Amino acid sequence: MTVSHPQPTRLGVVEFLNTRPLIDGLAERPDIELYPAVPSRLAAMLTGGRVDAALVPVIDLARAGGAWERISDAGIASEGETLTVRVFSHVPPESMTTLRVDGDSHTSVVLAQLLWRHFYNRPIAVRDLADGMPQTCESVLLIGDKVVSVPQADWPYCVDLGQAWTQWTGLPFVFAVWAAPVGRVDNASLGQLLSEARDRGLERSVELAAEFAPVHGWTRELAVHYLTQCMRYRITPAAEEAIARFTALAVAEGFVSATGKVA
Image 1 (cartoon, rainbow, N blue to C red):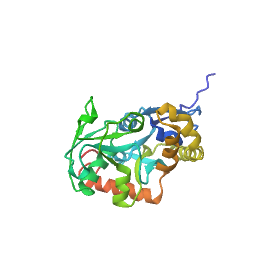
Image 2 (image 1 turned 135 degrees about the vertical axis):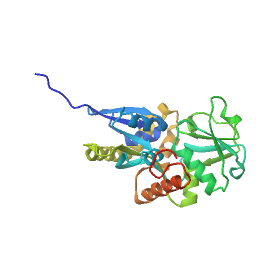
Image 3 (image 1 turned 30 degrees about the horizontal axis):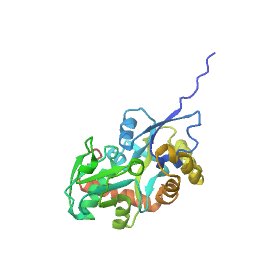
Image 4 (image 1 turned 90 degrees about the vertical axis):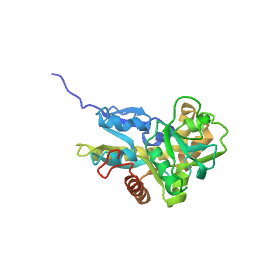
């Protein structure tokens, strides 16, 4: 007699250092499979059924039009400087005209445009960052470990988007949350598992920073500072307010239609 075993739950996860405290211990579980990718690819993985749940950019959750639900109080957020979501520029922020944007990002691209329209009062044109030398552009948005691990050009101006948002709104900023299709049978139990993984990871943040800093190209000292001081991993009431405000602004400015999707 053949005994069938439940299929592992497939999780789409961000492949950057900032996700390590959220997934601590999950790779060792036989009932979980992790599928790492850059943030911009995770929504398509969830839509296409390649994963059962994913750490999706908040803008993609808004664009899902109610098809997904947030399943955990764990997520990736900041309250001030992020270190890894930055605009580098050869001109002052209030003089920028064109921003080349990182293809790894969805949320940060919208965040940048909202900040320049409302915080800097300077609407900007957004273009994809083509292969080549970013330092030849007027301004460029970069996200992820490469902001720290790859030497950047000697840009005279740098804006950290998490810091700018908090200066503007007084709120934290939430970049990504755990989401799954609405009505999926084990969303509640999976959400609990993910929250517990976050709690475990937070207790081990310094240890995780030391272990994974070399893997992601960070120094140990900066990785410790990043995971323990810059990143936030709990969706607090203030973070809920930040998600609501960001989503409302994105809808009002046409980045998301009133029913989801790209407007």
